[in-house]
Image: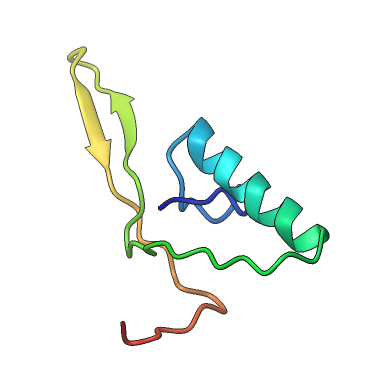
Length: 73
């Protein structure tokens, strides 16, 4: 599943990821026991640009893990 946790951490591609992140934050604010499991992709989602020839091109950016730890799962 994808979660919109922070705009500088691109682990989501759109509105449903933002909704899932809001759900997780609300559950935490209410003190509910909720576990969210998602994948942290090394390169995340593409950034698509239109080239001078008018065709779209994808570029992949590496996203360092920062404070996240590999669980080995």
